[in-house]
Image (cartoon, rainbow, N blue to C red):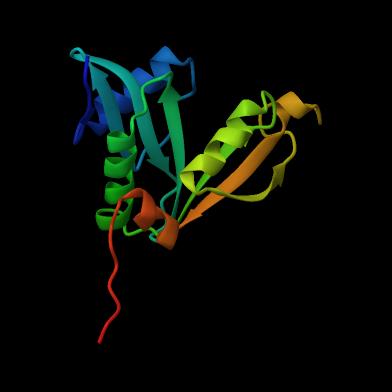
Length: 147
């Protein structure tokens, strides 16, 4: 059961993610699907792209592999040419906050009432950023110095 990426099917991937995870559709700048046994099982969606930064969302469960992360990072570098990539995860459950650090994301701040109407931890978003040099690490890109 190997996993792969579905590329250049942004509308199909985004529609699947929003329908499967009961989310309100939004403008998508780029979407990559994670495919296993011919079925979509995950989606990486870039939104709010401004030429320098994009918001990254992930929809799915247990469908991320090192190779998939590497390819998503390469798309962020070479196609979107990002200087930074931001994500927001819920403060609770706390395991998500701990997990993003393994992917070089740096804590940037708290967004109160991001996921709901109160200041409860379950409604609080934790914002993380991935800078270009960290995207290069994830993409396994070796950057040489100019002579």
